Length: 182
Image 1 (cartoon, helix red, strand yellow):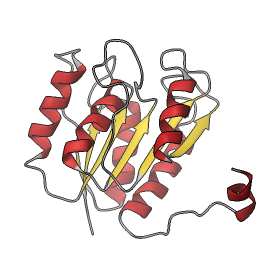
Image 2 (image 1 turned 135 degrees about the vertical axis):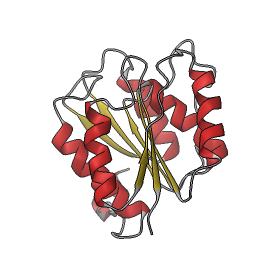
Image 3 (image 1 turned 135 degrees about the horizontal axis):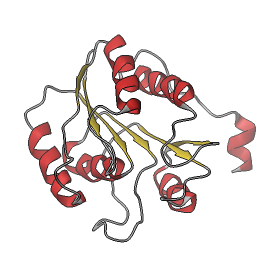
Image 4 (image 1 turned 90 degrees about the vertical axis):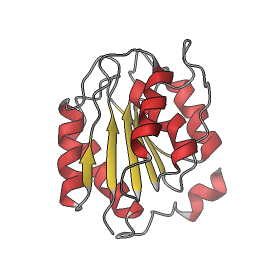
């Protein structure tokens, strides 16, 4: 099965920034169609959500959404309506002032979040609470908000995520000891 992977860029970046270019190559290796809309003309996250839901309604399915920072918020909010098979969020702008949906409720079977311990824009506590409430696959990396120092690792995480979404690999099951400790 191939899918359409739609990237949602952050407020300060563009549709083909470094992370998106690298992850797009991974998606193409999986045979996915890749799109990355340009939302640099608006800083309004709700307008970006409206645009994404309109655009994605016409995209071939299945759909996978990937979002970074504000784009992570946009993808998570839009996922409630679009119901993608996967949602991959990088330093998502969750629980920040100025965003109308404090806790987006994405409708997806596969949710992975990558966040930097040193993120000075989106507090790690916001993402921890969000991931716990949704039982998301959460990866906290020794990096900041831009997540530029861990790109090789993020590529591997994204490849694993795509493999699970596309049914090519089984999701990892935590060891019994970990489950018992929780």
